[in-house]
Length: 264
Image (cartoon, rainbow, N blue to C red; front, top):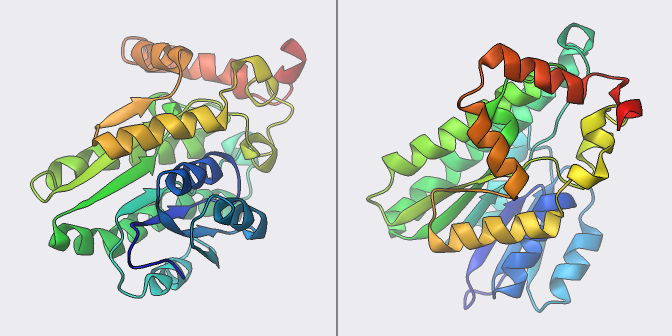
């Protein structure tokens, strides 16, 4: 049970990858934690407790309102000092080849679940006049994602939404920061069925999730608007603002189309 004498952080998607590393950053900086994911959390919780944090785990389906409600119920009215909305996943291959239920799950996880969680917990933070929110977006939101069309579309929404929410609540004492990672060395590409693509196998181009998380945590604690993790990713974001959309989409195809892994 998280202690009332220590700040409380809630981290979603915390079983592995960037979310796990964000939770580790919170534990290292004196937060107790509620961690959530749709995967088992026992190993992550053990690592967090080893750092001195009190940890409560919630394994739940964050793509559903019922799953988000289960997580919010675990808060039990306690003040949430930091809300790190990181849960999300991708889906590779051509849109017309994707199973609709699978692509809808991407939409419901990345958009619906994220928005609903923020809608449930942000009012309490604003009423108290303090708190930090970090939302994990992606550089994918800055370009049309051929062979990741749905995923990139969801991240375009998340990137835009986070920046808009920041403006809406800027007078409340609650800050909203957007973490914008690029390809990162996590389970993302395996779960998205993208291990036969260039972007999913080019380890040299992938960021360290621990470094991405540190950048995001620092931005959150300092109340920064956004942070793009990695120099190469900063360049891609800058380029996306001047390159025509169809040219950017074609560039994305060369990275994400099945069978491109052999070109790495």
